[in-house]
Image (cartoon, rainbow, N blue to C red; front, side, top):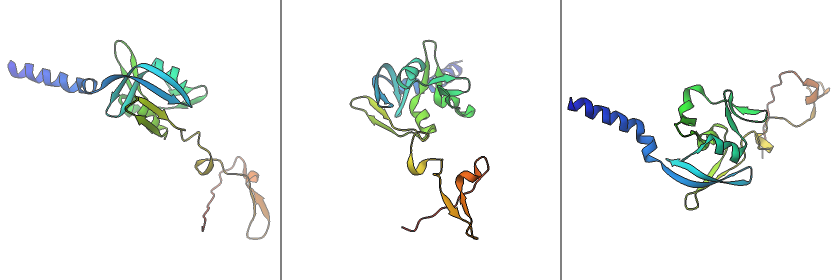
Length: 165
């Protein structure tokens, strides 16, 4: 009888370990260059968990059945990894904003002394070389006939580029 009680206690500790190891903090989140004070956040192994209400207040994103959404922009959460992003408790639903940042290729800087988390531009916000839209251009084919990229709008185009500098 004692071994089954001990086994049950160990099982409870294993399940509760992530909650026990984390610490409740007051945090400042800087998102889209706006600072938001979060009164009840949790830091667990360099991961920041905030309530879903604070997620909406700090980022304007909200958790919906189709994913994490803001206006028409929506990022689906991988079904097999839901526990990395969401945690439901009796008092609140918690969201791992740092795991979400990794999912959307968003850099994060953390100042532990000031409990401040800065979230940079997501991959969909960055311009320049990481853009998925090619600039308009016109080039001749091997027979000298000019072709513009816009001539192929609506068709699949495979571009091969290189640089020698």
